[in-house]
Length: 80
Image 1 (cartoon, rainbow, N blue to C red):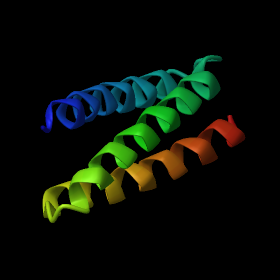
Image 2: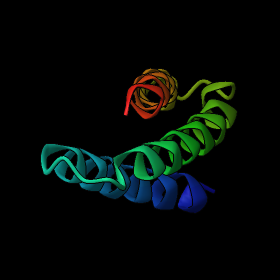
Image 3: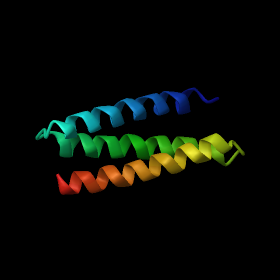
């Protein structure tokens, strides 16, 4: 039941780490990677929200964190 959610959590964490590392290098690809990161974070938030609606508190917290991360990535992509 949670396999898609867990997969997206893992992918989201990997993309976030990669985006942070690439930005720290001052890469010309930072903007593109931040946009991808925002997309993955939004997808993760949507999936987690499905389980949060069934009473899974940890999924509600994850969805909230992913939405905040997506917003930050969108802001960084705009500023890059």
